[in-house]
Amino acid sequence: MDTIGEFLTRIRNAGQAKHEKIDVPSSNVRVGLAQVLQDAGYIRSFKVAKDGRQGIMRVYLKYNGKGQHVITSLERVSRPGKRVYVGSETIPVVRSGFGVTILSTNKGIMSGAKAKAENLGGELLCKLW
Image 1 (tube, rainbow, N blue to C red):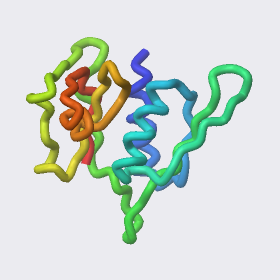
Image 2: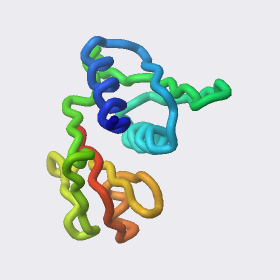
Image 3: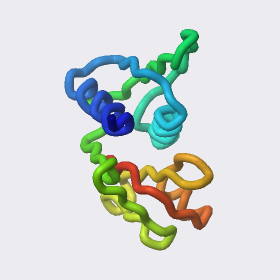
């Protein structure tokens, strides 16, 4: 089961349906992804609630003044059937710098710009703009 792909699909579908928030099971990877999305300005915020088991993460989506979801495209790059790894020199630039790449590095999940600044490579999880 691809938990990252499921998380990204839930965000994409909720944005198209104009939902205010989504609830997903929490994990460290999903919290890392949500933190990068929040830092880049693609979601308003997120909260993790403990429920005695895995926990629930509530993600609050962000829309522009016209009511359109701020994430135009959300594309999963590395998947369980085909992993994609990049070095710090080969991190792709999305939409001439207007988009964001998200990487899983040995220092955690971070944006491509931050990974390039810290001279880190890793698994290229997704691209969005």
